[in-house]
Length: 432
Length: 166
Image 1 (cartoon, rainbow over the protein chains, first blue to last red):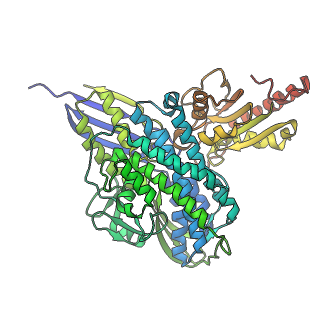
Image 2 (image 1 turned 180 degrees about the vertical axis):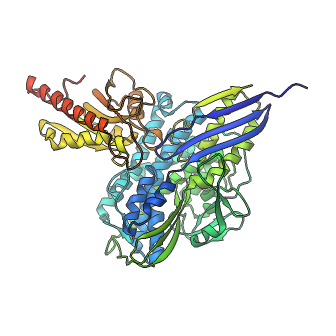
Image 3 (image 1 turned 30 degrees about the horizontal axis):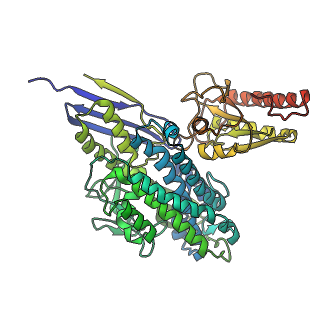
């Protein structure tokens, strides 16, 4: 009997602004022997930073955790602290927060669809190479992202690390006329997002489906951003305050980041596919129709089709931003005053990459006694590994180089913050 | 032709602040009164490309990744040479200065002149202080840029400070 050759696909650890990631896959013959995804997750460092800080400082500090989804961190923080302090926000502020989130989703999803994920499907090493052959498409992506940037810049005071979000509301509310100036470009963006959905739905998708437990927020009347219960397709239905009773983090030897799992059940998926599958009926008609036109049905269980789901969420975000701008009336005051008290509050909001959970314990002076932040990439980490186990088995007979590229693509299905790259992986292939 | 000097970086990440500090010191020295515009930027590719739209002459200053020579200053003329990979620290999702320049080159969106000053950093961790080597390099780059801009105007006041960059 001949000895089965062993192939090892190893990826160097990369230093990134938002974290470090590495990938290791070992094959013996065509059988997967091991898959390890290593993540070093920076938000953990921030939890210690926050201790001893006044609650009013938290939105500005947590915005520094991520350059692409600072609003998500701000939104989860302000909602958790407001719940701790028993604050109810003005309905106009609530509307502004949804609009703020629309801007971030447009920025983030456009970046991922056009610049990070599309090159995988079209066979390019990166977006720069893709632009040589698809200049009009890249041009469209750049303009679409800019439409999101404009919302964030107007609402947040600047494009990166916005500074306007406050516990109780905003430091300054925009005028009605300022928001209306965004409308024409957003009308273009809505058309462009529909074109995006048509474009990506025509890409080739590997035939790969998994039986996921999808987890996202669910709101009775809205596609979720800031509010709702945490639900799953397997019966989970909890308030954010029950999150830590139902989810736990596990240490694994090969990673500095904890694996988040559902207690007694294991891995789960958060992010666009989870939101889409659990909230399809809350999407506006234009987004539902766009999904049907793309041949996309809930539940979608092929993670490679997440690029189409993101495009549908782009349609939603542009449409929702226009609706909110149309309905906006400035609040009487941009924020309500918050009084310190010893308390604990939890909140989860929907970051572009999925559920983002925050918990803050405050003392009687409003100083943070403890904080917990569980970002979507931590929650998806175990699920990414499980995808790779199954997917590599499916493509194991292919050449090592092709397996490697497919693995990268499979990781990028989740748009992990640690990927942070047109090409997350620098590869060394070892053969026996 | 108008000249815009853009200092890129993140003030919270040690030596990554180098480009921003150059911009701030040029601003404090009143260089903007010499028909030069100074601005700060995060280095995020896509909005960076927008920042040079409408300007024919651009000077970018950013920190570069450690290679054992902290404080080393390198200058690239991006119109005539490609930027090396792995030299500029990544911004969000690895789209930073290099990617902005190379994507703009591909899409014919480079300004007429684009000089890039890279200051090699030593420490980039969150809340790290500026290293002494980069502190000296920042002062040196500020001096070079003031001289470069001033000489251009002295030798030919009819010309814009950006006209002798290429």
